[in-house]
Structure formats: C-alpha cells, structure tokens
Length: 70
Image (cartoon, rainbow, N blue to C red):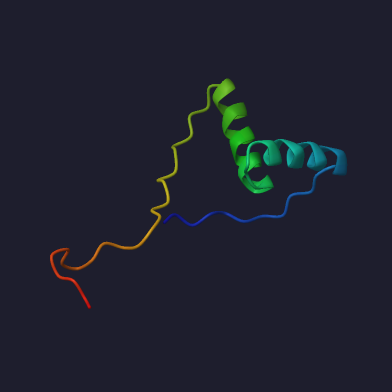
C-alpha cells in the first residue's frame, strides 16, 4: 500500500459545504471527493497522474488453499 501525503488544507466554509454535498451524493468521503476533483481538473489540463494501485480487500490468501483448519 502506498503512503499518502498528509497536509492541512484550509477551505472557505461554503466551498467545503459544496464538496461535502457532492461527496455525500457520490457516497465518498470529503477527502476522496477532493482527490477525484483534483484528478479530473489535472486531466482536463493535460497533466497525467499515475493511478494508485487499488487497495486489496478481504482476507489474505491461505498459505495452502487445500488445507482446512478445523
């Protein structure tokens, strides 16, 4: 998993409220919505940003899938 860069971001309250409404409609967090908006804006300007590797979800694979622990 790639480490994410954390930094403080100051937003006008009205702008934050608008992003919050959009994030709620898209079922995302405000942080995830800001990332989506930034990627879209950069793409419109022709800036290519590498896509992050998707997070693997669920249980890790078993050491031996044929072995069942009882």
